[in-house]
Length: 397
Image (cartoon, rainbow, N blue to C red):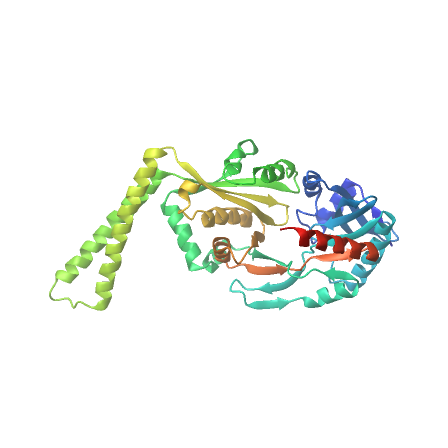
């Protein structure tokens, strides 16, 4: 067995059928990172019959003189739980890279290090595979693990009923507010770009991820204020009738005034106030946007195996309207109907409450992906490079 350089077609054919297929180990992502100064290199482990049995996209960058380092986004396309295979791959990869003056490579493998429920209760621990990598010389980088919320489901009704109540309420509110979800054509990508800050980054993703195997798609939520107002007029009329019935019961001396009846009256009064306020808001929006207004949008990548939610943006004027739940839910529904069952809702930062709590409401699993690793090729120069970096960082103020 040995490591060889693959051409783009060889790598694409292998990556498209691999169980760890992901949008970062792809030709499209390699082209994206070329814009950030990396050179792309596709490497494969072949057996005695010239079959590719492991591969990786390696992003290469010069450090000093002839020396380089590499980055393997999302790790290798290999079964990390096959200790024999990962051992051979590592030995042969180091041997290959040493010839080309690599000091080290960094990888952030998509190993499900720990799996938690949406309430952060540990349900699976795969720390053994991390220990095996350490034994092979991979340097474990502390405090670099990342959390993703991943929804696995193939049944629309069961999926929706499993959402947290707050998320279902937000979806219901959006429907009442006349919010609908639409697919955006490539030519109208500015709909999304106008709602996000890092326009260049997302512009490049949209432009480069246009293959059949890795397709960037934009969806947006649009509010129809006429529907908004009409929905709440209907709800107001219905609740006003209900309130009249409760009032008649309260005025009827033969009916006992129970706490339950009084509570119903209080709830009904609050709903009437709410519906009146919503009509006022909807009417105000209609006066400004009689044809409707786009209030949020999101970008996904469809790699024919799973849906990855990559970015989202909001119309600041409508920041109080929680439209992202219905936007994501409509996308999930669409792809469940098309046979998809895995939805990566994106990386979460527990310190950012909105992002964390919204995605948490989908009740998916919280996946802690493994920490980053450095695979050292030249130990002396690796230590020297780390020392220089430490001095450089220490000198910054």
